[in-house]
Length: 286
Image (cartoon, rainbow, N blue to C red; front, side, top):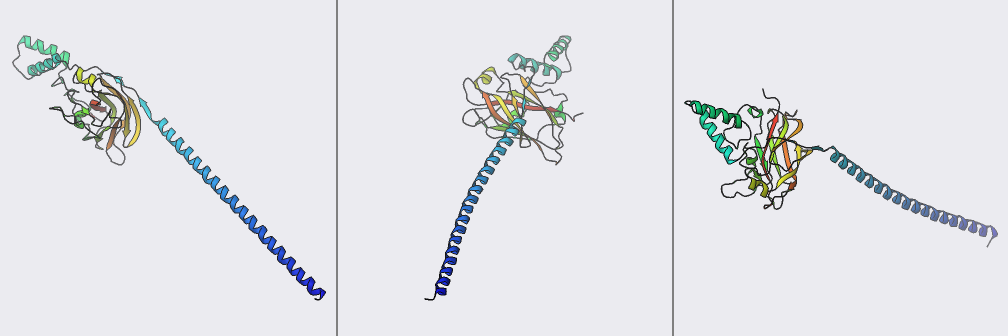
């Protein structure tokens, strides 16, 4: 073979080998870059996931921090004794008469001073005289559950909305009723609410109050958003919470106040949680 041909073939082979090796290097470099890129992408996704979890946790913690805590002003204990029931009944009898003797006039004066002339019965939560309820009040109420009626006693949601100490809403969930709720709806043109007053437990008698659960904490929602936690005392007196001013939503929607049972004081006999009354005070009346 001619010498120049050998040189030519050798040259071609060298170029081919060089190209082949270069191709291998490029493939290795590409593969290495791809693996590195994929690893980097995985790390980035992992870091983003961690960041999102941190942000979600921070938002949750921030939301919990923004939940307000309320403690009550303790009001006078209602006199629901048999003597009070008879006294108010006698007072109403004398008020409705026009032919009172001097002695009966004096008796009426004493009874009015003791019980107040605004109550028709000892069970009345508020006087029949003028109050926030002259122009305000909810128009609808509902509860998540209700204990089945027992004899003549009914425990519907309306029992915590009838302004009577004789009745009570009792939740019907198995156990202490944690998570059960009662909800009050106010029309947009109703006077605004500034205070919530709660008669805690089944106050109609000492037996009913002690033997059924009383609420220890209520979670308050305003228009579907958690607003605060009401911490109730374990007493038979009414308890008032000043919560700010709510109602007359700009979009014309109802004001909705929801009370969810968060914790209870256990009863001596029954594991049922009772609320005698939730009523309200506010502004925009008179």
